[in-house]
Amino acid sequence: MAAAEPKKVTADERRGHILDIAHAAFIRDGYAGTSMARIAALLGGSKTTLYNHFESKRELFVAVADRECAKLFDQIFVATEIAGDFRDRVLELARRLLGTVLSDDLIEAYRLIVAESGRFPEIGLAMHDIALRRGIQHLAAFFKRAMEAGEMRDVDPKMAAEQFLDLTSGTLHKIRLWNVVTVIEPERMKIESERIAATFLAAFGNEAISRAAREYSGY
Image (cartoon, rainbow, N blue to C red):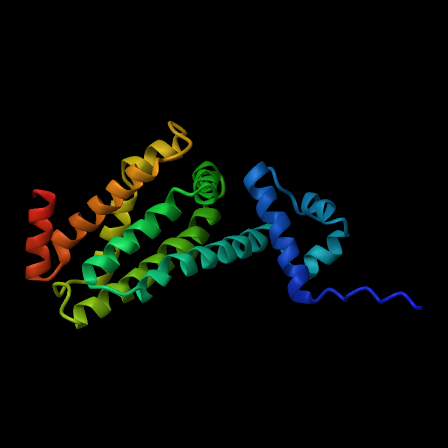
C-alpha cells in the first residue's frame, strides 16, 4: 500500500506559523534583539522564504501585532452581544477589558512596546494605529449605539471611549505592569470592574442610570 502523500501546507498556514514564531521571538528577545535571520533559523528555512511573506522586520512586527490585537478585540467586544440592560453590558465590558489588559500576553506586549519605542518610534506609532486607535473605534461605536437608545448622555463617543480605557489603566494595571504582583485575585478584579462601571455610568449614563450609579458608588 502506497504511503499517503504529506498534506501540502497552504500559504495562510505558512504565514500563521511565521507569525507564531515571530511573536514568541519578539516577546522573548525584544524588537532590537530579534532579526529576520534569527526568525528564519527558528523556522528552519531560508531567509528567502521569510522575505517572500514579509519584506522587513517592521512589517513582520506589525503583522504580529495586528493578529494579536484582532484576537483580543474578538474576545472583548463579544460583550456587546450579552443580554441585559446598559448597566449590565457596561459592567461586562469592564470585566472583559480589565481581564485583557491584565493578561500575561498583553502585559508582556506592553512592556515590549515601552522598552523599545524610545529607540524605535515606529513601534509606538504602529501600536497606536493597530491597538489604541482601533480599540477606541470599537468602544466609540458601542457607546454611540447606547446614546441612540437613550441609555447614555449625548457626548462625543470617542471621548467616552478614551475615558473608559483610562479607567482600566489604574492601580491594578500598574502593579501588574511593574511586577509588584504576578496575579490579581478574582475578588479584586471583580471589585475593580464594578468601580470602573460605576464611575463611567455616573459620568456618562442617562439621568436615571447616572443617579443610580452615583448612589451605588457613594459619589
